[in-house]
Structure formats: structure tokens, C-alpha cells
Image (cartoon, rainbow, N blue to C red; front, side, top):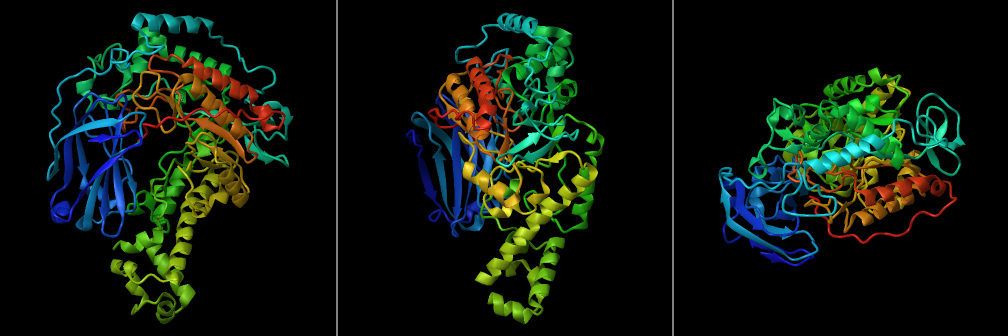
Length: 635
């Protein structure tokens, strides 16, 4: 199969084979090989008679034969991220809520855009009833430092000795003094603009724009860094055939192993090579110095707890274990009217109590990117009624209809239905009855009630447990409609992740106006094709210099949006060449696997942070040179 740079596809019609094959068999399998310059993202899309479709996104490394396996059971739409099979990179599901396997009429195989043609060899493309054998020959793909073995680039370490020398030299230059300068307070706030001090971080609108206000009363536009940690661990399990000989898990490099031997961190191994038993303290000192010198003022989400504890910088905190119920309505959306949900929310909020007096904590995120919210067309009411489960939320919906219509006759008249009683609504088949405009309106209104309950219950309990710290929201992957804003007035700041070249000003203004709250961005990033990586993330450019320009463009454009009060970059380390736990392997870090900064990128970072308050207050125009985007290799 050969596809042009803009991507291409082939498809198979099912009619001739008989559609029952999609229920008679359980997997689609094949062996794949390609020689592209980067990770190949293959899209396998399944279409049914009702024009629903779901796509498997699979990442395949170049120059190594890889066995792919698509479990057809996942066409029920309940999973977003799939478990990795050996040799496979990230596997993601996108599309409608489900596909009816009994009425599949087409399968499409496609590629995403690239800078070159793609040529892919498939062998043994089959429907099977069992998982295939993953019998791979050993083929070391990375070197002893964790770098891609088959490529050279500016900044690649020639050997461990060169890496140790460079890190040792930088450690000697790294001062322990705070290099932020006199214009910034102890919590990172900008001393040229001052508000009332309350002893905790808060928000304030100055009549023109929103701000974070630090505990001493100084204004803050939050430029944060996510995942500040010694390492981005590599998933070893399933990738053993591609690794060099790794050190034992019970010797000098013991701390480089995690997850019961399933993950290995070349970054930690390289720090141990460089600094021995003092590696962690040295890494903390060096990283703190870098962050302050480069102008970051906030430790972002998922950062190392020891680093946070020993740092001077303020931080944000990701809460764990968002409230759940045993039975879910769709993916991770719980039965929100169940007493179980409120009990779970109480336990969830309790984790804030030990943090109540921490003045360096800006606030907390309740969760990150709910999986149910990845389907823009999702109506939770309809989804709930399609299930035979008698959810507490379904009972609340039936009661809500009874309060609204009083009798089943009135409901039937409005909906054009023919129910014998309201109890009929508990039968799953009634969800697909004739859909009238009144029924659609009721579904939509109760959909908003469900989402409001989902947000409001844990947010209210979190505020009771910790009234002083800011609730920073849920970091939605995107906002598909205003339904997603239901209940969000309980937040102090609305957060979303925004993987574009600049924040969506119109959307941010709209969200802030609806909620009367400021907005912050929890994730964005840029990768480049000139380093030793095979995937460049969700937004990509050609060079590290252009990465620096992209960062500067994003931050200064963000600072010019009055409703936006912070942007946090994802992430500190490059991801591993062979993939993290889920197979992501992006070149998005400020530092590489040898803890070496991408210096041209850092220069853009420093320039953005130097300019942002003048841009924020209208004294300077934001940087307006937009780098040329290249096709992504994101999954």
C-alpha cells in the first residue's frame, strides 16, 4: 500500500463476504513493515449500516516488522485508550459511541498526512478468533543511553563520558540563589501589579483582565511546566526485543526500574552514571535552577512530589481517583444520581484536607480529560436509556418526566410515543422508538442535568474540604458544546487542554463570559523533526529553533487574551523512543533522555517569559511570527 504525503486509504466492502464474519471472528491481525522516517500512524475504520464509524489509531515503528491486533470487541465504544500489544506503540479509539458489528459494511485502512509518501507492506491480513503470536527477533533499536541508535543529530551524545562531562559542567555552574530578580515575589508574582493579599492564591479581575493573585498580593500569569520529574519511564514489557542489554534491577541502577520491572528510565540511569548516589538531589538542584533561570513560575501537573516538596516554586495539584460508581453510563461517566457517587465524592474530597495550609499550592485539578467527553455527539440520556441497567440516574429521569408530564398519556402526546406506562422507559428497546423534537429536547435537557450533577457534587465537597485553594477544573481535552460548561461555575478557574499554535481566543472569551470565570490551559506542546525521535507530538515544526518560536508565539498570544490567566507546557522530558506506558513517544521535552536542554527551544522560552507581562498589560504587541507547521505524528 502506497499513500501520498496528504495521506490515503484503501477499503474493503463486506457485502460479498457476508457481514456475519464480523461477529464470527474476534480480531483483525496482520504483520506490518515500513521504512518511513518516523512512526507510521495507521487508521483502521469500521463502518456500519447506520453510518456510524469507529477508528483504531495504531502507531508502528519504522524498519521493524510489527504484528498488529485489533480486538473487535472494542467497537462497543467503551474504551478510548487500548492496552499495548508487543511491538505496538499507542493505540487509540475515536469515533461514534459504538459500531454494530452485525451490520459492518466496510473496513478502511488509511494513513495520516506526512512530509513524504508512505509505503507499507501488509502480510497475512486476517480475521482471527485468537490473539496472534508476537514472535520477534532481537533487534536493538536504542543505544545504552536510550537514544535512537540509527540516527545522528546535533546534540546526540557520542558516549556516556561526553554526557557525564556536560552534566558535571552544568552542575558546577548552577547556583543555589534565586535568580528570578527583584521584580518577582517569593511566590513568583509580578511586583509591578499588586492586589490585596489573602495568604493564598486567588483570582481577580482588574477591570480589564483576569489574574492569578499570589499569597502576597502580586499579580501572576502562570507559565507552568507539566511532568517535572527525573524521567519519563519506558515501557519494557512487550518491547524487550528492541532494547539493548539493560542493567539488573537489584544493583546500582535499581532506582531506574519501576512498576515491578515493567518500566525502565534511561534518564535516571544516565543521572546515576553522572552523579552516583547523589543523583536525585543533584537533579533537583539543577532542574530548579533551570526552571527559574528560564522564567517558569509554576510547577505543573503530574510533577515529582519530592521535587515539589523541596522547591521554592508554586505548584498545582492533580487530585486522584475521581468519583466512580460500579456501573457507568458510558466509558468513565458514572451513575451520578446514585448514593454511591456522593459517597465516592466525599472520599475524593478528603485528600485535600492535608493540603489546606500549603501556601505554595495554587490550586487543584479535579481530573484530566474525561474519556466520555471525547465523543462530541454523545447524549448521555440516550446512552443511559439504551442500556438494560436500571441506573439511579435512569430512575431520576423517569421521575423528572413524571413531574413534567404528569401522565403517560401526556408524555405520549408530546413525544409521539405509545408507552403503556412510564415503567416502559426502563426497557432498553424504547430508547430507539420514534424520535420527536420534544423527546430530543427532553433528552438534551436531562443530558445537561447529568453533566451538572457530575461536576457539582465533587466540586461542592472539595470546596467544603478546602475552602482556600482554587478549584482549577477538569482540564477538558476540548469543549464540544456549552453542555460541557454545566456546573462549571463551581470552579474558580475553567481549564482545558489546547493543542493548537495559539489559544482559541474566541472560545476562551465565550467560556469566560458564560461562567464569569478566568480560563487556563493545562497542556499544549510542539515537537520538531530534527532531533533523535520518531514522533513529534500533536503539533510539530521542522527544527528546534522553530520550536522556540512556536513556544514564544503561543505564550505571548496567550498573554494578550484578558480572560486567560495561565498556560502550562506538556512536558519536561522527551518521551522514550520505544514509548511510555501507553506507547506515546513524542519529541516534546525541554530536555532529552540525557538531560540535555534543547537550547534553541530554551531561547524562545526565555524570550516569551521576558516579554509576557508587557504583552499582558498592553505595553507591547505579542510575537506574531507563526512557524510553519509540518504534519504531526501524534496518535
